[in-house]
Length: 130
Image (cartoon, rainbow, N blue to C red; front, side, top):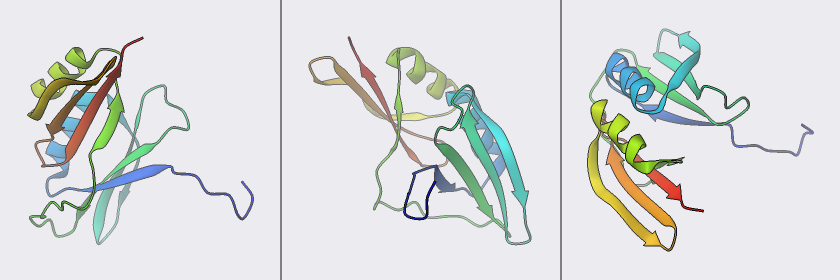
C-alpha cells in the first residue's frame, strides 16, 4: 500500500463486560479471536470471521477499570450479509440478542432484520435473494 492509499480494516466496539461480549460475538456470528492486547488502560480482542482472510476485523475494547458505558446514537448498526437470514437470526437470538425490527422485505429480493446485542450494540442482518 503506497503512502496515499487507505483501506477500512476494523470496527471497534466499547464494551463494559468483555467475557459476555466476546461470548455473544463468537456464538452469534462465529467470530474468532485473532489477537489480544491486555494493556494497563484497556483489554482488547481483535476478532475475525473464520475464512474471511483480510476481511474487516471487529475489535472489542474494555477500558480498565471496567465501567458502565453509554451507547451513542450517532452511528448505525454493524451489518452482516447472510445467505439465510432466518438461521442467522436464530443464532443471534440464542446468543442473547434482542430483535428491534423483525425480518422485513424492504425491496424486491432484499430482506433486513435489526437486532441489539446483549451489550446494546445495533446489528443489521441483510439477505439478498437471487
